[in-house]
Image 1 (tube, rainbow, N blue to C red):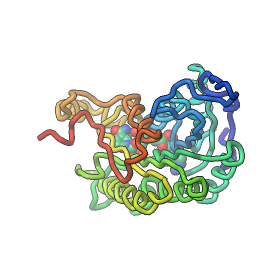
Image 2: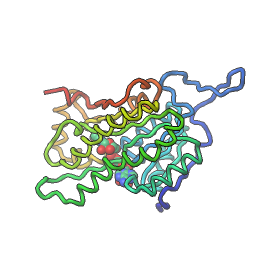
Image 3: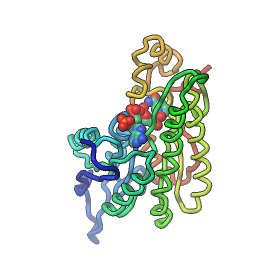
Image 4: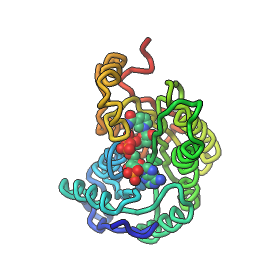
Length: 284
Ligand SMILES: NC(=O)c1ccc[n+]([C@@H]2O[C@H](COP(=O)([O-])OP(=O)(O)OC[C@H]3O[C@@H](n4cnc5c(N)ncnc54)[C@H](OP(=O)(O)O)[C@@H]3O)[C@@H](O)[C@H]2O)c1
């Protein structure tokens, strides 16, 4: 049963990884690397499956307290179950990323519960395919609202906390379509192109606040969003042939880059869009 917008559930009172103590009694992370996310709170939108889930899992393994967003409580609970089976804690925040009221109330609840949001991944996204000439206006609006306006709105909601703490990491999930194009996905291409410039604009404005804003641009990954393409034998074969790595990406292969961009290892990097595509975008 979906719960009311902005509702936060789950158990993250237990840390994800074992703690150690200094002589003074202060808690220390056992990881002690630039990629250590111990003590950080991360909100990942659209995280019950696909790339969002892989990102959440990667951040949790690096020590972060993760809050998974989605529109369906049951799907989020199942995702939390998969994490807890690995000994990883997680919470959920049910809200629609296109609804500013729900975003505001969810972010307030997360702040109340954990005290801060250090990391935001704007991952939720949708795809609608069809020829431009009669592409429905309503679907254009839906794509722009979800893929471009939502990263702007969710970022705005977490920014006051990040600005006041003079620290934050925001990562947008862009796409190869932020730079390249294919027929049949014009609105998606326009929205993801906007995400690239949103990243740059936010980066330069927020750098003085010690907030880094970067983007990940995935190539073709095997997720539900691409189900129709995976099931299309011809397109499926084209992806493998066109990609120097010779295959689709697996969602888990995004996790390391996500941890890097969420961690202090990337503190002097901002405004960048990092492509992860098995070499597709550099091959003729
Ligand atoms: N897979 C790829 O090859 C690829 C390549 C480039 C970029 N990307 C981008 O990567 C991101 C993740 O894609 P994916 O492949 O993992 O797709 P996915 O499996 O379809 O996951 C997208 C997630 O976003 C959620 N979502 C959609 N609209 C939402 C809303 N209004 N509020 C809250 N959650 C919402 C979906 O939940 P619902 O079930 O509720 O809709 C779903 O959990 C997207 O931004 C996508 O554009 C993917």
